[in-house]
Length: 152
Image (tube, rainbow, N blue to C red; front, side, top):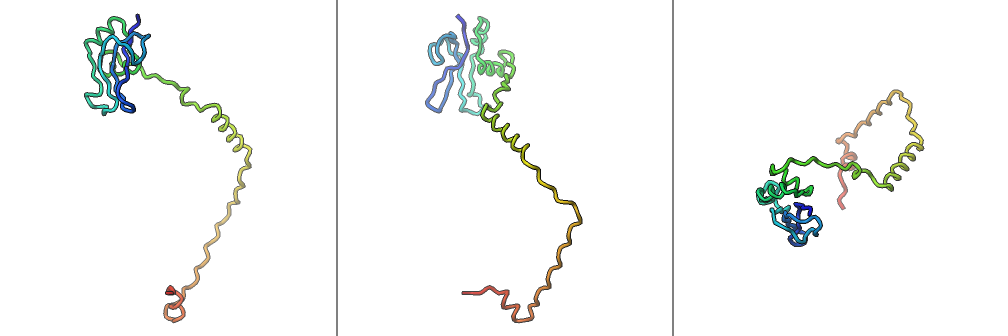
């Protein structure tokens, strides 16, 4: 019989709570288990001491009898210094765009390569800005009337 130390989900909808259990690897996730070895509450803050509770003595006992932890439980046990911290797994294929997205990227690159490049203007001396016209003096009554807004 192969034994696994794994998570069994409990709690309400959208309010998960997990028990860390020892179970036969053939039994269902939330089904029959041999022994409860701790709890995990993902809704609590990561630094909360109630987030992960482990029965270290019983876990060490079952590990010595050949039980294997799942990836998530192995991280918990590694953080608690019960086993060596497992290596981070990497899936570089997960970030690769799908087939249709790759086709779109290829079509965009071909369209950009086929488009004519814009013609650059010849570099020459820059024209000087035109002189501003002299403003009308406020002494004349005609100029004062035109600058005030009309009320109406």
